[in-house]
Image (cartoon, rainbow over all chains, first blue to last red; front, side, top):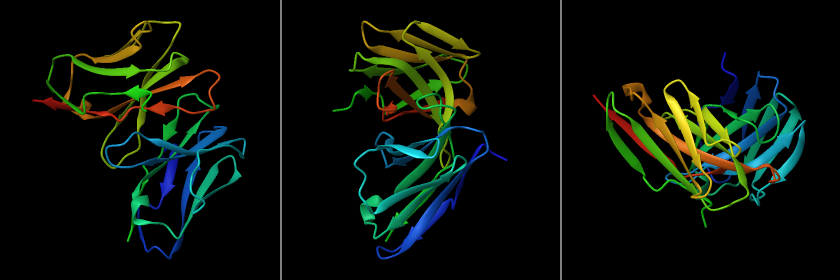
Length: 112
Length: 113
């Protein structure tokens, strides 16, 4: 079992749909992150949670809504997305904030 | 304005030779640097890191060099192997930063047999 698991691996959704991405870490880490990777762009940090509390929100549109019910799980709720939101969404965790992060395999999201 | 730059989008190296991946940064407050490797359809994997109190860190075939005065770091892979073909990302952070790792755009390394 990998340390950080993301589901689903692939998701196609319409602009009026509501969906959620799930991330689970089995490493006992205290911090979890959502990143967005678009083609040929640097990784963009979206949200940071430490001990289940959000500590960073990088001006992400409200159509992306994170949820961290406990230290092992992180969700990203999606609604009324735009085609330009199509990207690879990566979850990561680290022992503490800003230490080496371990990434999940990502969810490839396509908005049609 | 990108604070972490990887100016080479791709690099091709013969198997067995040395691969050198470069990264430049502009923020003098950065004091911790990391390299990640990413295969297609997978998340990045941590490779090696270096703090600003050092100028070199080595782990097996991977060595990271930091030149603070030039705001430049490099990742050396020797000898290069076919499995090293991947995209390599450089990332940096500052001790008093707002929890952000600032990432470069990546360099695609291709190891030729």
